[in-house]
Length: 257
Length: 304
Ligand SMILES: Nc1ncnc2c1ncn2[C@@H]1O[C@H](COP(=O)(O)OP(=O)(O)OP(=O)(O)O)[C@@H](O)[C@H]1O
Ligand SMILES: [Mg+2]
Image 1: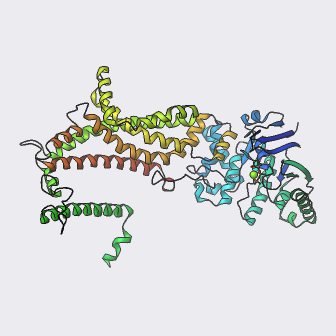
Image 2: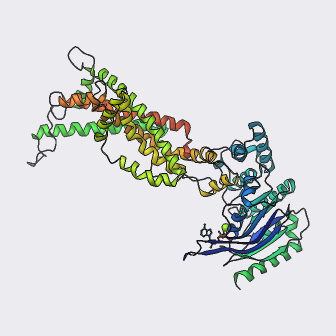
Image 3: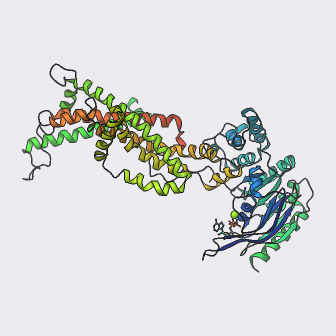
């Protein structure tokens, strides 16, 4: 059973009206447990919509989504999803520790266990020293790490990330990428990751999915056969450059057909 | 060296007090200046024959210090000091206002929650809520008094209900606005945790609404005092500020300073009440989350 399987998935917004948008159309994809899938494509090609379809934030107009063999809504109720968006969306009245505890609180974990788990997650993202800070006392990158810790706190089987590093500077971004790979190696979580950055997609992924707009659909899937574990040395690897070129060409074909 | 310290070294509270006293002194000066001018010109604008809008004699405009002195003299021959009489009345009125404030705020908060939960309730009820505030409280108060009279409720409780009638509205409006303030991603996050509606309410919406709630509570505090004073009239309560104001208004031409004195005390009640709300806000809401007034656009989600 694959971690995620999409068959003929489509999404039409405002069907029948003059504002009808075919955001996603005829998407087929199977993702194995532990895979890291990046979705890349021009703005408006339906990447976020695809992620929202997987995460049961919006229902599909066509096709079926199955997560661990379940419907997305069953998977959501089973707390299979961890989500990270471009904005960290931390609750400003809660300290860092309490923000990470939020999902655990909602899931009814008792206070002692909750606090232990949140502390472990903050250690994982190397923010244990900031547990008692408020979100506004942290930099954007640190806030995003808190958001990742929060998403991982309840051991979701699949992590959905929509341009999580989009607002960060290049250096912070590369550091966060390495950290994300390290975290994934420790947790074994399946990841679906939306990005605009080709190097980011190649560096992180086991496969890169290229999408085209109008209607949003998958045009190419590139296998990333870079050696594991990946490190800063990987970014200097000739194979890394070849794959960048491969993905760039795939994208170019999409952008000016 | 000493003098240099004053302006910049003052704490914010001290600065606030100084500016309050400064404005008070200015208002007193305007009052007394106008009065002095009228006396000097015989009641016309200087150099013209145009009459001043307000007469400046003792019958219309007592000296500000006469108002203060009146507070310190017996209200009636051989009785208690006017200040004492008014403070007792104020305390009595404030009891109704406090109950009305609490009742009104609770109802307002409840309506806000109801509206955010149910679009149907909002569509159906909101017009009535708005309409309720366009009906003059002077018309509502006697009706409530008569109805409650049959139910055998103590009268000051009826006054509290009139006061709540004015207090609930700003709280309802701002609670609703505050509950709606978290951005969509925060709600989607809660959805991804499969949070129950009550968890979304208490862990996301209510904390987000608190900064919106306090400006409304300040308005509710002043409104509840007005509601209580007005409510006391048809309820014919002998002990509150409402009756005192009515009595002194009837005797205005004989002793205008007493009416002004009761206005002073009534406004002190309002200021004191708002002060309590401000204190609560300061203890509950960190400075970074406080909204200074109702027109402030949005509470930002961090990182949003
Ligand atoms: N709720 C919605 N209602 C109507 N149309 C929508 C809605 N959400 C997305 N769309 C439309 O669907 C299309 C795909 O949007 P989507 O946000 O998925 O793109 P994207 O690939 O994530 O773009 P970006 O890279 O800019 O984030 C766009 O044309 C957008 O206007
Ligand atoms: Mg997007």
